[in-house]
Each structure stands twice: as structure tokens, then as C-alpha cells.
Image 1 (cartoon, rainbow, N blue to C red):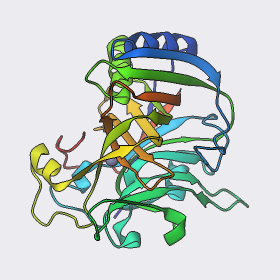
Image 2 (cartoon, protein in one colour):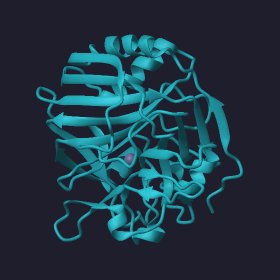
Image 3 (cartoon, rainbow, N blue to C red):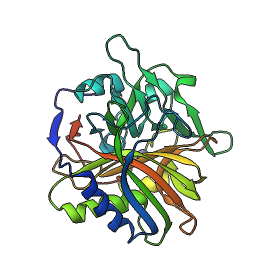
Image 4 (cartoon, rainbow, N blue to C red):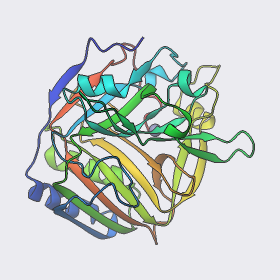
Length: 319
Ligand code: ZN
């Protein structure tokens, strides 16, 4: 069963936004020919291309790492089902807007699939809104099949693992990141994360937010509909099990990244993206470095909550 009784809370380092912009811009310039980072007003996220159920990323920002890869591999733990409304209470923010990267509850969906959570959780007198997407491998043609969660299902459950950013969904100041023409080997997210790790050392900070791949293509994976019946014991076995795709911009990606693990057995970065043309999944990196353009909005989280941390852990499959 999902265990909410042992949630751990950790206070994160929250740098001055202007300072963080300077640090990130310097780091991104090592990976991208064009890079600029500044403090800006969060755009209205209810508008295109986002269509989120809230206006902004602001108000009591926090992140959570729920469950983990050890519940997926070597063999699946089918009893690990979580609920966004319960999670928002665990985060001491009922009614939170939650975005990020996770897996669907196979009990609800009837198969395994990637989840792109976008949920306004319930609070007194206000019902929840589920604007999430999910992606599976189409059994007909083996291609990516992205669907709107609420077109098919009416719960707020997810399964196994998720990396989530939660906030009040208010407008306000955020960090605006522009990057284009990639010259380094790292993805946008890895470049930002490693830049923070390098600069802030043993202080742990975390960012959550959304970015749009405006031009180019990206490499993603989608988990197969069936869980592996034989144990997956290495990164190579996991990669052979996953289905990889190249998908096109514009992709709207939701990301959570942590500069370093303060000892909570975290996944340090996790990004899922959706599109309005039927493609979406787990983002690795763009495949068109010469033409790629990113535009993102992020905010440093104040706290991290570690929910239902696996007792038996390993480091396989955390890319
Ligand atoms: Zn993922």
C-alpha cells in the first residue's frame, strides 16, 4: 500500500532570484550558444500553449518525490497507488496546483503509462480539476499515443513514482529561461541542475516549473503497457524495455530538479512533456541542437517532502 505515515520534510536553500538568474545564465552559456535568464512576471498559464488550470507558478512553492523507481523495477509493486488530493495534504497545501512527472495508476488505466500531471487539487468547497495527460505505446502501430486523462478517467490517482512541484497557482515573479542552439552534451534540465550543484555545493536547492521546446525535436521514452515480467536489473535492461521516440516541438514540459540529494534517496531530475499534436512522454534531451529553442519558467522550492520512500533501494533506471 501507499504509505503516507513516514513523509520526511526538508527545508531547501532558496537563493535570491536575481542571484540565481546570474548563476543559471552563466552555466547555460556553457551548454547553449544563446542563453538568458531573468526575473519576470509569470505568463498567464491558462493561455496557450499551456492551458493549465491555474494562472501561475507562485505561492508556497514546494516539491515532492513520491515512491520511486524501486517500485517499478526490478519488478513492479502494483499496490503503490497514490492520490493527488492526498499528496497535496501531505505537502501541507490542500488545494495546491501540482505539475511534474510520474506514472499512471495501472489500476485505473488498466495498463502502464507515462503521466504528465497537471492537477488543481481539491480544497473545501472547491472540486479538483484534472488537466493531466498520459502517454502509452499504441498497440496498433507501436507509436506514441497521448490522451487527455479526464477524457477517459475521473480520479486523481497515480502509481509507483512521481516528482512533483506544488504551489498555490498564483501569478507572480518567476525565473524566465531562454536557451537556444545547444553546444554542450547536457539537456536543458541537466545543465541547469548541474550548474546549481556546482555553484551551491552542499546547499540543496530545487526548481520546479514548465518549459516549452519551441523549435526542434526531442528524445523521449514511454514505458510499455505491460510491466516487465522478468526482473530488470541494469540500466541496459531498463533501456531495452522502454520504448524510445523522437517527437516534435512545440512540447510543453514539466520539470522538477534538485541540485543534490540531502540523503532522501531522490531522483534528481525528472521531466515529462505533452503537446497539442498527440505526442508526449519522458523527456531526455533535444535531438536538434542546432535549431532548438527553449523558453521556460521556474521557481525555487522552499521545501521538499519525501513521501513513501522505498526501504529497499537501488540506483538503476533514474535517467
Ligand atoms: Zn519519467
